[in-house]
Image (tube, rainbow, N blue to C red; front, side, top):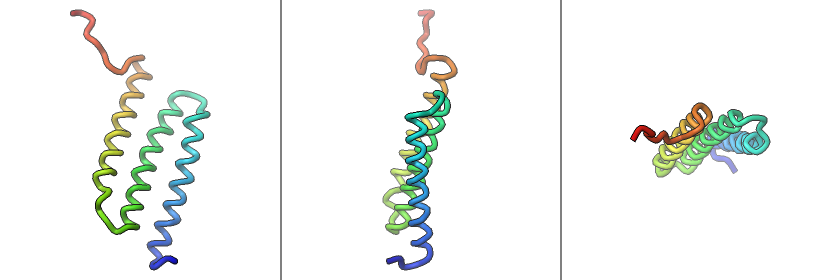
Length: 98
C-alpha cells in the first residue's frame, strides 16, 4: 500500500491535520468568545496550508504552491480584519471630517 516510510509518515500527518481541523471547526462553532473563534479560524487556515503542502508532496508535484500562497494571504488578511474589528469595532475607517 505504501511505497516508502515517508509515504506512511505523510499519510499519518495528513490524518492528524484533518482531525485537528475538525476540532477547530468545533471551536469556531462553540467557542466561548469571539477571539477564540478568530484564533480557530486562523488555525484552520494554517492547517489548510499544511494539508495542501502534504498533498503536494504525496502527489510529487509543485502545482499546489500557488494555492498554498493564496491560502496564506487570505488567512492573513482575514485575521488582520477580524483583529481590527475586535479592536476598533469597524474594519474600514471613513474620514468623517470631509
